[in-house]
Each structure stands twice: as structure tokens, then as C-alpha cells.
Image (tube, rainbow, N blue to C red; front, side, top):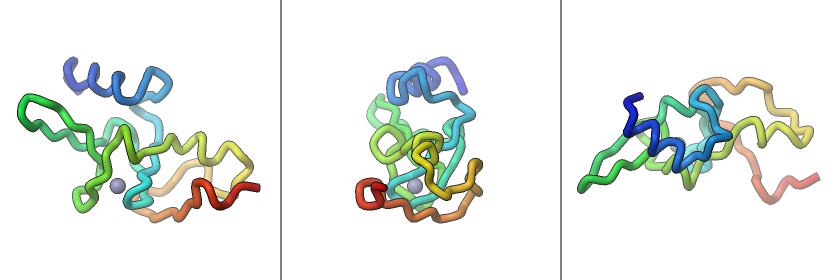
Length: 95
Ligand SMILES: [Zn+2]
């Protein structure tokens, strides 16, 4: 990750998300490591997108830190599997 992209990453994600953290995409419901995002440069702007090429999810808008999803006693695995679809009801399954 070059310096410019890394700065964009921090602006979008804040300092609490590390590049090695797992993110869950609210668009395709799959996980990827934060640093595996796709980068799109358009009109001088950099967009950070979901890792998976068939997904148009946006990293800052659609991703959730996996650690936060598993923190409230859910039965999700501690480490998610790459490419696996995890259906997570963000607001529905409150216990
Ligand atoms: Zn996605």
C-alpha cells in the first residue's frame, strides 16, 4: 500500500481499523482483510471498494469490522472464511 492510499485508508476507516483486520461487506455479505480492498481511481479521486470483483460495495460505507459483529455473543466464527457468505441481520437479530 503506497503512502497516498494508506492516508486515504485512514481517512475512510479511522485509526482503529488495522490493515490486517477482517471486514464484512454489507453488500455481498463476504469478508476480506482490510488491506485487500480494491482501489479505483476516478477523476483524481480514490475510491476504496470491496475486495471481491463482482461486488460494488464501498469500503467506508458498506463494510463493518468483523470484530464488532462477533463481539455481542453471536455464534459467528472468530476468524471468518474468505469467500463465505455470512448473512448477518445487522438490526434484526438483536438479542
Ligand atoms: Zn462486497
